[in-house]
Image (cartoon, rainbow, N blue to C red; front, side, top):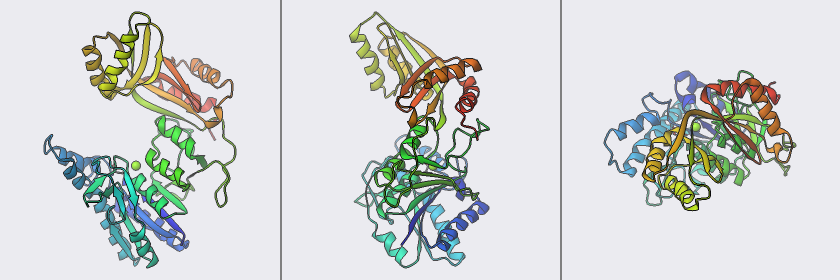
Length: 405
Ligand code: ASP
Ligand code: MG
């Protein structure tokens, strides 16, 4: 049996015509001799009646003391609605199908409601259906505890459901259907020249995602990598082949993706604030207090530069209230600049290659984008810039590194 997991996001099931496209993809898999296992997200996006954000608002209106178990039970309904509907549509077209909650599909989680981790996948319920030629339509983003309570896997968790089922069923591929043609060299809404990448390694995708590219849930990527399940990211609405994500080395039955490219793509993270704190050089106690006070306030920091007198780091703007409070409570005077963005050049091939930083600096300088701070790792060079310079910086880097077609 050639099992393929086909996961469709919220926009893919949002309208009758979109759902028709979904049916087309499932029917095509059948016609190709595959056994599809369908995983769905809740219908639509923020504002739509059955979207996760709408359900979240509904239960949050019940006040601050909503039990997490009850919140999860309500949130899980969004995916259940899409599955029951799509299964009915398949049956209506003459294809035997069965809608299943995550728990019914064998997804067992721990009891961390709201952000549950899958601890086991029991493949028997799905295998039994597949053997009978029935298409399982599984509610993503949810599972059940060993005691039978319904849990959710954290926002964006339908990808994780798909990857976990792919691993448990030893699927040939996990297809992540979305509303773009695949993983691109940059955000196409910002960089007109951005184009789809045909093949990527798990590491390249993880780096792009970590630097802000909205692609696939990191947990799903981890699972797919761990169990060597190839992922295909493609559009529900076009016949483009999409992006294949797999290992970079050749192994029997798997694709060889060739050598690392120098630069894979350009990613960005908006809504960043920079914090600068100064105190007497080498006051180790204050230095420790500074970082501990932020950690205790739950503020995650990035782009960290520590000099004897000056400490500079960035945080997400959403953490600003907590950071201001923590810094004031610990009596630190901080210079805070908000309205910034982090732009990153990402590529596994840049490791040990001289001149990449020089090129980044040269490109941004000659475009008139001021670099406020930088950081690098083996596979990324990140620059902090003003939010208003984001598009200019992304387009210049994309062009400068010849990422256009
Ligand atoms: N519906 C859930 C969310 O919006 C899960 C998903 O779409 O992956 O987070
Ligand atoms: Mg998603």
